[in-house]
Image (tube, rainbow, N blue to C red; front, side, top):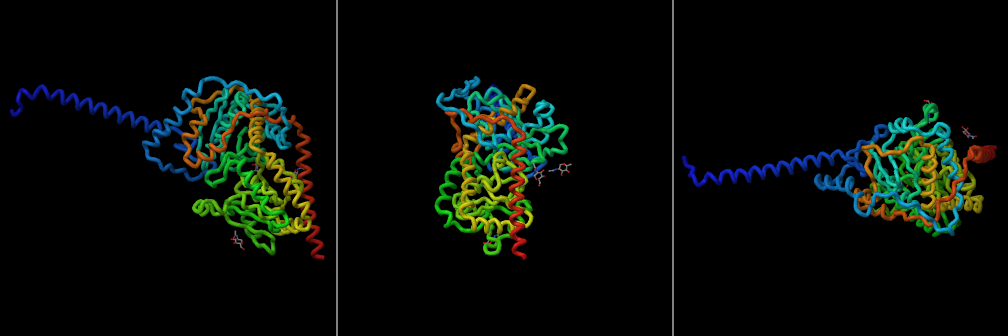
Length: 498
Ligand SMILES: *[C@@H]1O[C@H](CO)[C@@H](O)[C@H](O)[C@H]1NC(C)=O
Ligand SMILES: *[C@@H]1O[C@H](CO)[C@@H](O)[C@H](O)[C@H]1NC(C)=O
Ligand SMILES: *[C@@H]1O[C@H](CO)[C@@H](O)[C@H](O)[C@H]1NC(C)=O
């Protein structure tokens, strides 16, 4: 027996230390494991732990962070960032406006809010409607007492979810205490889903960035108004200012008398594929350029600066996979916008009136129609210039102030239709500007901070009352002007062939 009696008392102490150390280690490991596990189930607005929408698949985003940093960040941003002392648990007081600020009437296209919500005018919107709409939603947004809660259902492509929610948070900041309690289902992918024929017995209230005349989907301002970091497109007010300035660098007569388009033709859009065939400056009067985003990103977006694309008298708009955010930048140039008959509508494009603020181009016989439009414009320079200017004015009317007003009125009118009291579901998390910025990467944060809103001094513009005959009249008038242009084209073709 080699053990001396003197050594025996030391053995339990040593063992005890060991046991304590081991226990501490296990508890820590278990805790870390649990926290990691918890974080690995926490869904975020940046897209962590979310699957792409099954109705429109896209490759999942990869997050380059280290696991523990990621764990800490997810927990911190999601559960702690909104609960600091600066965020007292009270309803914001209703905003008081400066008494000398009377409210202006909203732009005409705001009338479409009534049209978009008309399907629920008699039935109202029930929790059954919400449950059905949720089947096509990527986000459920609940606003209660001025606080915003998001239930993340699926991932959105790129940073759409983050920028869309940011827009809503800025709305709350702009009109404190004025945004009503509301429960909204959002899909952030491109194509409308709620077909008016298929869902006629039960229209589903689903917000997205565009709609068509055959869908119930409710159009809402898209993320790019707050910025689109992936393509270096800055917040709307700033981008508009620069494009307008850029458009003034050449007078109308100095601008190239050709139609210009630059974009990605490979987005599964028939119109864009057809457009590439019209790429001939002399024969079709059109210059069609391919945008290579990877190359642009590499060289710092010098070639894609929107403010440098206003040197042509004519700018072509062609829809992509669905509507395209490029419409507002194209109209901003003040060139004559040649809009190839769009199928999709976003919230403001309903303000477009053919031959007043744009020139309609038929997708059948596309190249001929483009040539016809350019020749018409070159023969009628003052008219072409005036229509181009009207397009730019329409975009100037659409300042961020008006974008917030549109959101405000749409949400307010929608909330009046809800026949239940909105309550955030248990799976929803509160989102505040701090928690959202916490998840943003450097570039995203830079764009988000630039588009921060402040409490408005003026009340929202005043919304016109519903008038469905007026909308019908507008649609008919639009149809008529488009047919007029088509007739003019046909006439010219006939004259030439005689
Ligand atoms: C809507 O559904 C009907 C019936 O299924 C179909 O014929 C029509 O093409 C659909 N419309 C659109 C725009 O998808
Ligand atoms: C259109 O033509 C120009 C020059 O003629 C060319 O540089 C450009 O790449 C063409 N665009 C496409 C989409 O092929
Ligand atoms: C406008 O024209 C389209 C197609 O030409 C037609 O389907 C629609 O009913 C017309 N709308 C009105 C209001 O005249």
